[in-house]
Image (tube, rainbow, N blue to C red; front, side, top):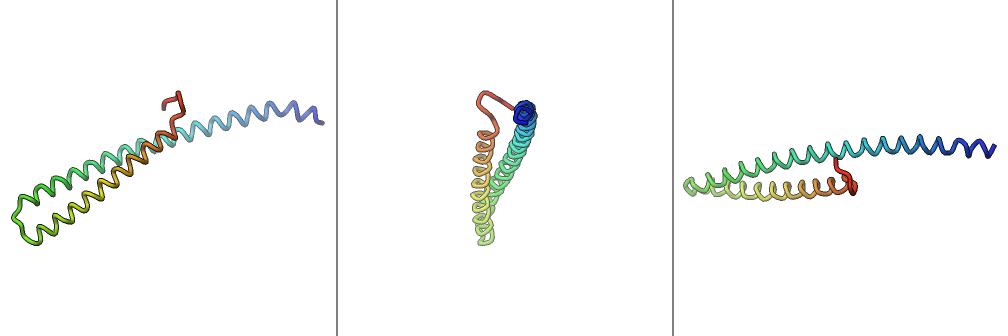
Amino acid sequence: MAKEKKEKAPSDLLSLNIELQKKNIELLQAMHNLTETVNSLTQRMDNLVNVFEEAAKNVANVEESSRVVELATKLEELLEQNKSLANGLLLLERYVRSKSIEPGRKL
């Protein structure tokens, strides 16, 4: 009986190893997709930041009424929030990339 278990063990280990490798490949593909999505989101956030920067410049050119000053202040706050979000997304992307790429292996 013990001999049968020893004979089955290598084949069981082999099938488990193959399954583990398949799961690892699936995980790497999911991490790659996540990285691409984060890159896309980062670009969209950059575009949004550019829109707010342009809006702030245009608001500065308009005469200084209290309403314009109030809007400019809100735009500045949104711009800072968007910069913080963009930085956070970049950090997340770096983290995902560092965890998804094995040493000596590229996606």
